[in-house]
Image 1 (cartoon, rainbow, N blue to C red):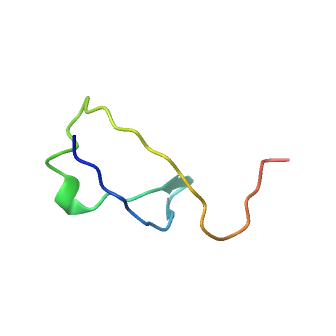
Image 2 (image 1 turned 90 degrees about the vertical axis):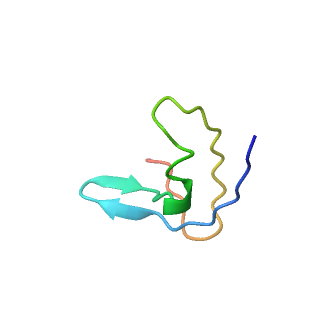
Image 3 (image 1 turned 180 degrees about the vertical axis):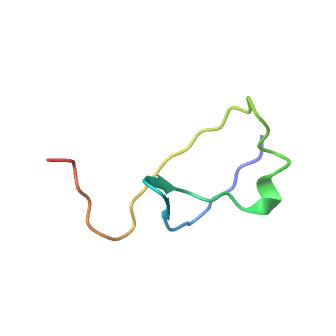
Length: 50
């Protein structure tokens, strides 16, 4: 198991908010690869949709 910690800003692509995965992980993240993603908000306002 390989583990990486990434600190990323959320990007916008059309109506979608996205997280861009670095190129060095491209070969490790093939279709059907199972990954665990935890999101910790470090700054900015959080809206709960209400």
